[in-house]
Image 1 (tube, rainbow, N blue to C red):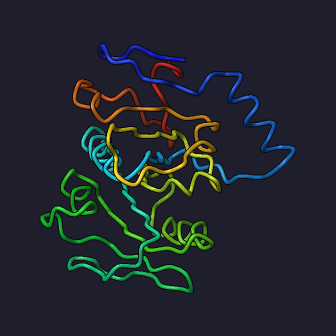
Image 2 (cartoon, one colour):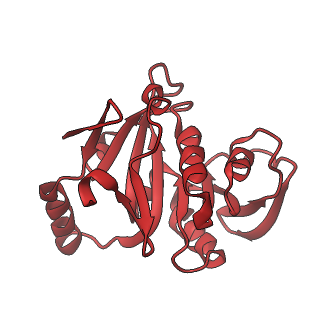
Length: 211
């Protein structure tokens, strides 16, 4: 369904029927770890607006003491400002300490995140890496994370898919679109003065649905 928010149409795939079917699938076919204090962001490709949205969420809820996470499958050379906090077979986890470099994790820190973690992870170690990261996060802390692949293992409080015209390296997200999600367009983000999310009692929620 579509929800009109600040004169912007936001597609919300969180109807009661979709949620019911999703819960039934979890019961009969697989078990997912539910993390209600996690707001998870995916995108249709590079430059689809994932970090831009993450920073908007952080700015709006900075008083809540957000922990931000960016997970990537690319094992590039580590940039200055990253402090190695954990390493194991298949992943390396760093804390971002530099808020001025302009890279994605620096932007999150500059936006007001209390802590920012960056992880380089192979696909088959994604859940292990995230489980290690949340060891550093106090219970109930709001988490904002960029990682499309993590959605296959976790059921977050809110799952958002960012879409942008002309995004680079477009990805096949058809499987993700079948899961409960909110679809937002990068071009519409600036038109929304206040994002339609809330965080209370250790849980993220989409306001229009849960008010």
